[in-house]
Image (tube, rainbow, N blue to C red; front, side, top):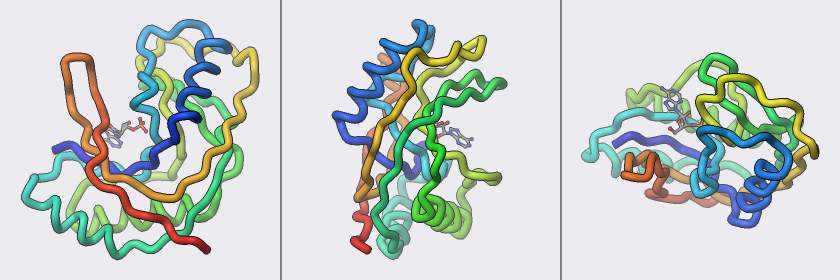
Length: 172
Ligand code: 3AM
């Protein structure tokens, strides 16, 4: 199973982002469907099904506060041609949560990626050129009260991210 921890965006925010993409950017050849919008926290890679219970039990021990952020910064990674939406103000609890989940993954021997963490919602893949500046600046506030373990599943209609389990974030 190909797994990662991530943050779900609520349905209205997904609809709003999708609407903004259609309205403010040129058509993309490989847009990410709005059902797949998420923020990755820690990528785990391939995990044997037999280790899922242990993974979930370890995640049960994670305590982290709820937080909010505003998705207001479009970004582009040239080499993979990824267009994304991020934030100019990283909430400290988000960074801490991502670190905790990467540590958990490393302790369990999974291949959590190294390097600095750039929270983002991927909007389109395999873009050949950076898109022009958006006609309307993005501004999507989002609140997070849980994190999710996702399985990346290849289906006939492309990749889908299925939520396997959720964990609540705490009131401060
Ligand atoms: O849509 P994003 O970028 O947030 O990029 C992949 C996607 O996240 C990322 O995991 C999410 C689900 O596939 N991903 C895939 N392979 C990866 C890898 N080897 C990876 N992240 C880090 N290392």
